Image (cartoon, rainbow, N blue to C red; front, side, top):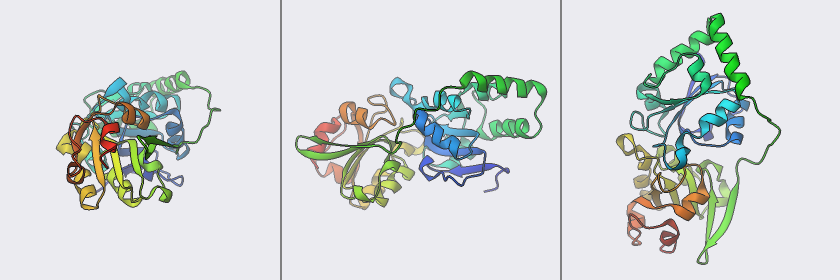
Length: 282
């Protein structure tokens, strides 16, 4: 796929490298997140990011990242989850339609309803041939977004807990796992798309609970479940309106199951079951 200079496509933010030099990131990940996640993206020299709105969901968690990217002086846009498949950056680039924007995006003329490619063309114009008015608007939006950057915590946090005697690993993102999580029952805040499922297989977890990210275009938010069943991994998604995306603890406490893979169904795990109840069947 031919891309303009300075644009990089990644299916997952977890694949973003410190060595990155492309200022514009078109990514299949959700637009949730935290200030620390936004800071990590900034440290990889990203100046603009396009992410999936993940169905928006509970407490608008699917677009919460916008305020954090804005505070880190990163231009950010969320695309409609029904316009582009979550976890698939190429579809975000080809078909994504902007649903929400940061103040920096508005300052350079990006509007709701623009395609991702239209929005990127506006950014490239500002980066390469900015007018004095565009520079003034953009710099003003940056100044308004500046906050204290001194509060740093470990991004890849995991919590070990028990549900009726069953050991469970809780984390905000499936990308925060490592080789030591092999065989774990994982409750995470990630979407259930193909890129997230790839991490579950990479680390050989026993079972995983995802957010369904509004399910979205071509059922992208739950698309990994079949391949995970084929790989011998129990997998379910929870309603994005029952628990916040990028909030593993909320998935554990409040998540209501929407889709189960065949392996999970074989253990009598069903739609509308609570996550804590389903864990007992694994």
